[in-house]
Length: 314
Length: 251
Image (tube, rainbow over all chains, first blue to last red; front, side, top):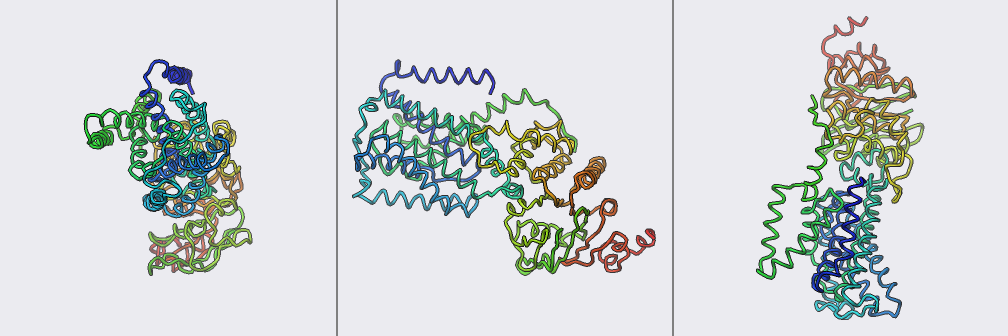
């Protein structure tokens, strides 16, 4: 990483730390939501952009994480910390379970099976009134004293998001991350250099599930509610769009995409009910003009300066 | 070293490989030749586990490797390159080979050490030996076709194989690139003692570097023998080489 990037990151983090001091309560809430959606989109991108696995129903793990944490808080007397750890772990377990079934199929077929199985999980949550509260969800989840104000929830979200992003960033740069990108580019070749493709993909799915679960738990902290829509497939679609919009071959692209989409949803939906229309048109424009996403485009522009232009003779 | 007996594979009624036999001794360079669609690539896919055979056996160093998954075959120290360029498009030349080395060193489950600090020396050595060191930081999408074919071989070398399978290593290369590639193959055989199995359409290359030749027609083995034997075999001449003057010329 260059000095400039480090400086930029440092300034960004300081800005995020100071943000609640200047902004009204609603915007602090909004910033928390953007952060945790960004974390969610980044966790999807771990398998989508870096792993080339079409995980179309990623929201399942987000919802399961949120419900896991909530149910632990409500139904057991264990300390809150246990609940916050349990949520992501349950998500990871679901990641393993769905992964091991779907991984036998490739590309679009994986995505289709994943949507169906994920929808099954949604139905269970939606219908099981006694346990999950059914379509009402669960409201007014008690939070420990420390996390009860919007400001403290924001700082908690910020810290956990930054730590999670850092861990994922390390993973992508590890040998496992290199191998994952190799598998994305060419699974047959990867296997032929001695890599057990399925097992590596499965671990990636478990890790992505875990971090989606972290995002889900953070939502519980910020909003104190859970509801079945958190596992509905339309949310999954939104997360995929966040990745594509921001740039799915860049690390921070999904975070940017999340910011754009959450902002769009919040502000456009105050003017019109058809905010999804605005989203759709934005998406089409991006696909036409910035096929590698916003951040992908910026990176390409930036990099072009370094690679000597050279025409290869065939 | 490698022994293929009566290997067969049928795709929807089409006998792609039909009772093929092949034997490769340690240190040899063996060529597989045959007209288009004779089943050469399918044979390689069967040996390396990309396709499972219907019947027949593949023995490597006396061990049965029939039907093993490709990654298991690779761990037996068998590496291959592909006819159609098969590299990691979005990664650099260095990373392409590095992944292969990391895989051999069984470091692929490492989640937290930066890749950039691992297997640098080994990867550089391989790139040096194939002559790609100067281009190591380029994305493979920016390489010429010839360089990409060489990168294929470099990736295969990352697994430090004892047995190397090359599927039309020089296909589509410019004349100068071809001669460089042939020198490379000879060098690998001579200095690293690799056993090499390859297929190729250019007869000059085949007769130039192969110790022995196996001829495939319609999925089956016609003959396997020395260059001279193959050149003078009537069935081969009918099927493939065309005319008997090649034999006369040789003798």
